[in-house]
Image (cartoon, rainbow, N blue to C red):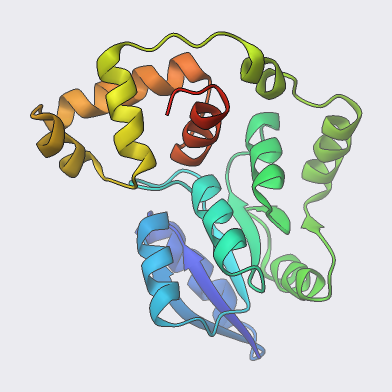
Length: 215
């Protein structure tokens, strides 16, 4: 029995994934989380999961950040990205975060089933188009990450304060209360911080902030 958790915020797509899983007696759906934050909480309550089918774009915490956290806290759990996004940047970030596979949401049930078994057997499951892009990325890796690590990053005093609050693990509401500003202002500062640092999530922001002595 392969025990599966799903992280997907779209109820229609979550239902479609559930229906594919239900076609196979060897697959058992444990739970569905609507975002990365909820997924981490659910795993804390029930670690009897073999594979996570992970969406990329989700509110509160996206799939890339959730993958990094799961790989760090629960390395025994395999992660397969199941997404509509097949662009180089998402593939690169997913692989870097530690994903064991990368499949598109329109993958047929049989391919999904075989992909899950392949991952549990130590392989890396990918659609042919994704595998080709992954090979191209190995030949011509994305350079912006390493280049931006060494460039000067200039943040305002308030942006540094917000970054420090993020590094403490606080959410938008808590940061707003601590800095006595609105949640919408916090979001705007975070957008500016991500843009200036050329990062896509909290983990990347914290890592680059520490490396550049901004935290």
